[in-house]
Image (spheres, rainbow, N blue to C red):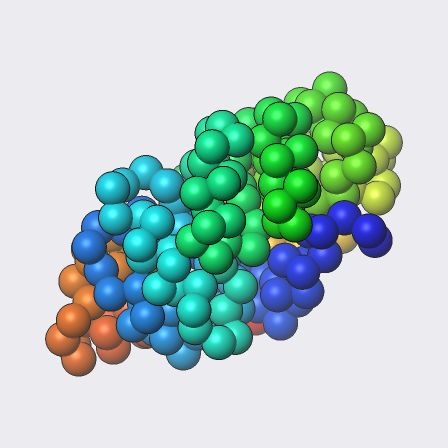
Length: 214
Ligand SMILES: O=C(O)C(=O)C[C@H](O)[C@H](O)COP(=O)(O)O
């Protein structure tokens, strides 16, 4: 696979959960350590808050965690994410200018798709790893399975509305390499980091989610 998404696929192999983080002023280094201790190997910091790029940069400096940016809406966001040390960018939708900028900067682009037309366009652009978003309201596991017929080489990271109760039903599909979500990294825990109790609570939440899909 020549797609730069390979690095993310490899990070999801030992643990197929991609935490989608909405961060306030949390300590990025501690956040990365808690995620790692909880068992995940990749994380997505969404560019939705003023603190996101600083937290991403602090997370990206930690070992054994592949860190990317989420909510990447235009090429300028790609530049900012690359400067902060992101290794991949995730978008809610398919924008080939964002994809091109990411590839020009050596980052994987994982755009969101919902329809066969979008998957086909992404396929023609050379992508082989896509986010299926918003997964729960776009047909869930049955829709992802159906896309596997015509698009046999495409792999998906379904995200959006996934919970502990249904993560496994996506992960059982052969064309799913991981699922993304915020259910195990709620902002209250992520931004409450600082004391040992909060740190342990976040590790525990991640570990429970990882255990449930093992
Ligand atoms: O903005 C992006 O690029 C995203 O990645 C969107 C996220 O996938 C969802 O916001 C996560 O959905 P929940 O798990 O339902 O909270």
